[in-house]
Image 1 (cartoon, one colour):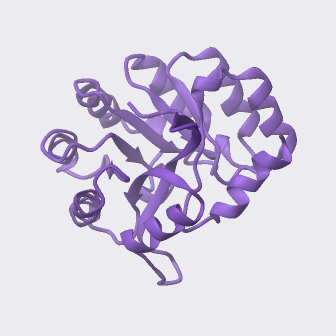
Image 2: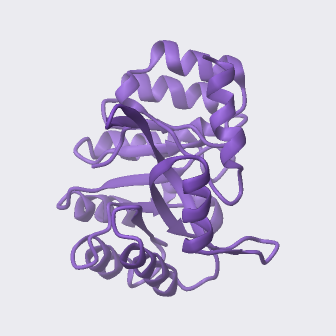
Image 3: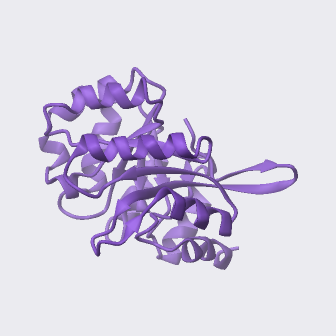
Length: 234
């Protein structure tokens, strides 16, 4: 599993972006692998983890990520975007974590329109994921479909699956996300889109540094801002 903010290579700090996307934004702008790697080079980001949220076809989204992985091996790490309501969800998990070698699974209950605590198939999917060396990444913080409490209960039922809360719970759920990460061994926090300086400082002060993952949420957020906020906090 790949869950560190940075590492040392040839005496330099190398940055890993845990959370970005490929495809098209809601405005229709293309977010290509080439454009992403260009931004990575500009901001000296060594490696990035990506999923594709654009469109409505889960298989096409994940194939696009797989093709990007092959085009930029070692730089682009793939996550499979899974809709648990799809009849092909388990097959898609197996294919992407096994033969395609993706590193994790992305769930987005707000985008796919379900309540995690009222979606029993998620337990079956987590059980299947636990058979691989992979993590689960969840969009957390957009009420009422993506609360940390709901995803936290699932994480607690599956302690062998690392679960990453993106955005540190976003604007209205941040403090609950932090408490869950502090008290649940397999819950991690990803930093993109969280601009509450008090909350970010709380995370730095109180959460195990091995559970804090730097991310940008590109192209929806800017690399410059996501990096600058940590410079502001020293």
